[in-house]
Length: 300
Ligand SMILES: Nc1ncnc2c1ncn2[C@@H]1O[C@H](COP(=O)(O)OP(=O)(O)OP(=O)(O)O)[C@@H](O)[C@H]1O
Ligand SMILES: [Mg+2]
Image (cartoon, rainbow, N blue to C red):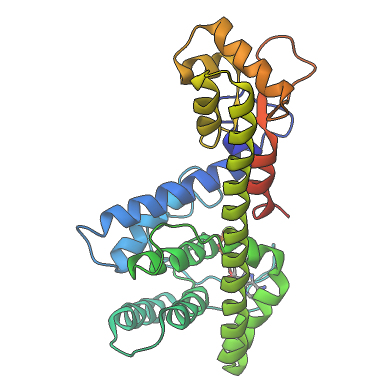
């Protein structure tokens, strides 16, 4: 997460390009999909297009992104074989039939509440496993995507992936109970619980961000002597929470020495924390309390 915010930085020891790329791809793919809805209905074709973006240059990029599989696959722990797989999805021919039935289900006028409907779609999608790889990522993206296209979410802000990750074995177990016992209730309960927890966390993060903004606005109001660049920098830090002195001067459109002065003042006030105390040049400063709030719902 820090690495994603720190996009302008050189590579540090914790640099994990693949993790970053996956998140960047997720954002690009969902944004693309939502834009594309203007010209293409929510369909298998759109799912394939989104999948292609999702898997660009990351795990599975060599396994036909954007194309449904043409061979048998299986689900289970890493390295497992067809013999000891936890579950074997349908053959390619059956898979195509199932996907087309799923596409019909998207549009069925069944009065199923949207959250339950996407719970059903997600489980079916994972069970059908239409791609060679990236079925997990695509299936999770589908949840937020569905809620956006139903206008239940106005922005793609529900990040349920973290909940699935935190409760991975329960998540797998629930999916398998649907597959082997037809036990849909236990899956729906788990899913709805996940939506509730994720939404509550997002709400408290939003509240914490608002009160952080208020707190430092007041602090700055008392020290800035009419220096409007202080308030401006505070606003900008919510968009760019990790900055260098040079970036501060560019963002504020002031000279480098002025930018550096503002930056130092923010460090004194405890808003910015020097992230690179060992460095003399190319130092980075972090809006630590804000980054802390953002990090809470994203890392194990
Ligand atoms: N042991 C298991 N039992 C039940 N379901 C499983 C199991 N292992 C994987 N799955 C399902 O398959 C998905 C992984 O499929 P795939 O590898 O194609 O996608 P991915 O995007 O690479 O995976 P990931 O979810 O790890 O990001 C999981 O998210 C889960 O839905
Ligand atoms: Mg995979």
